[in-house]
Length: 145
Image (tube, rainbow, N blue to C red; front, side, top):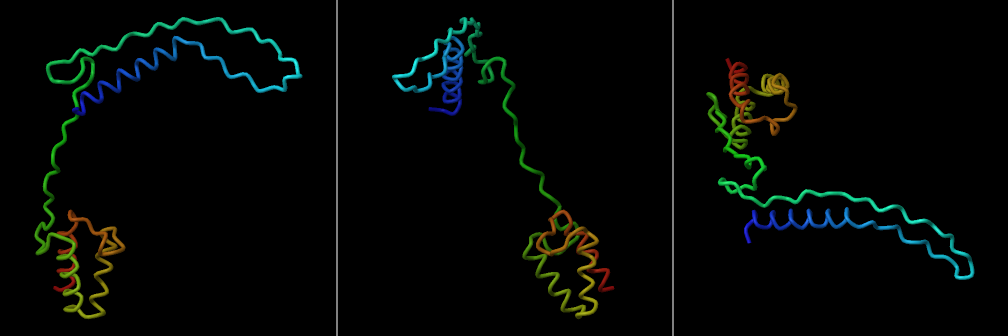
């Protein structure tokens, strides 16, 4: 059974249940009382009539029920120019690059890498998004020069 036919079956069941609920007047259950006590008499509410439009199961040419908007179409995200001049394109390459740059710069200048990170809005190297790899690379290279 395909997904579309399951959806149609569930829609029909919901419409049928809704119509049944609206066509019957369900009174609340009477509270349990002691048989020796008198039970108060309550007048039943007047019945109400509700007209429910029947759901159309007409299927349009596109395969979706008539009156329904077409299903959304999803496109694969465009590849991010992650490196944008950086010699790495994944988190492992980023960390390897930053660690080797820290060692090359030494502890005093290497600590300025954190300033580059905070300038990009990050507090941790693991949080850097691929679209910011190029800016981080440029910032670290500026420290070297």
